[in-house]
Image 1: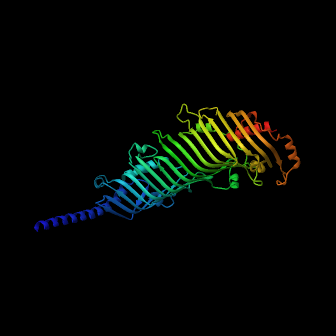
Image 2: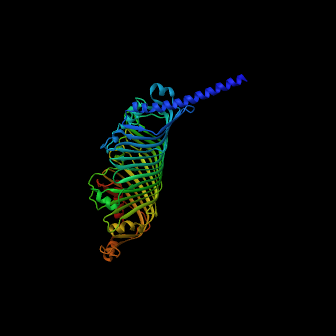
Image 3: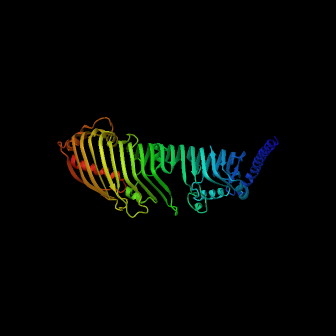
Length: 515
């Protein structure tokens, strides 16, 4: 009986000792934490919290109602810059008591941040090394192996303008290493794995555009974004009034963007690189609008080879695909008569070997295949090849359009040149070679019953009988079921794009055969 009594006393004593240690440790940590934060925190931020609980059994610390404020924001008259954050709870798991006692520094297995609300105010040109300085000072207070954030709401203001909003952001970074060497890098930490998920994100690119996305997921070797949108921040009239010279206005909606076998990062010399085995753009709906009311832009336009040569970092996409998309181009001479429109539906594109020339001595051709419906009606195929290493910007583009009802072009010709075309283009073929100075090659067409209708200038609904009759006198209305071909040579207008050169080459071929 005495043996059991002694055992009970020993167990009870141990239990009381554990409770006393836990209570004492809680009191000590609650007393010590503010000292560690204040003594070691020589960063630009003040950190406060509501209460702290410690579990000796689980080796965890939970701090609640954390507030992070820039120290300068506490002074009257100081500009509102830096990070402002409120965090309901932060849990530090698997922390070391001995490191806390000996080093006045928290070392732990994981840091878990739950539902933070953070806003970062930056100047127009933020300092590049700000993240490194902050990480170096934070590392003096706490070191963790793994970092987790759940359902955070993040905002970024740059120059007082809302630049980014990210809702319900979750993040995990595992195998973290911070050292004097890592602090020299643009990304001041090393890690073994990571993943970031976001319910919705928006980013203001400049005063003209904002990009949005939903269900954003970034992980090793893969990026996926749903409902991607590139949206203008102003209407067409306001855009035309805001630009000093002609410029395209883009509106893009995309069901999804997926980059697979993705690799990205920075070399030791801080050079950036991005590589992907495939990039798939699904159900893109793109509108490109050009208002001719703005003054002409006389600047020389660069072809795509030169644009790839000028990318100042390593970029490579083995296969770029666009699936089941719609591309439309609108051009407007004035706001009174509307825009002429050319569009492509059921648009499928496969581009292979898209890459910058950065760090390369040679590379294969960029090879682009397109299958689509021209103006929603005719089957169209093209193959386009060029090599970014070729400083003459040489290219070859071949294609065909089959069974095209010419009346479908009325949505472009009626508002743009006040005319309609009717008839059937049974077969259209082109094979052009060119460079930065022009294009040359063969154009061929087989058409039936081609006619032109020209409208009156003052009443665009009424036919101008005289001009229509004269125009049709010059038009050969069919090719008698034969494919007629001609040689084409067109000098490039250096202030126009590649597609302007292609369009003018096709138009030159039609003119030779039809007139």
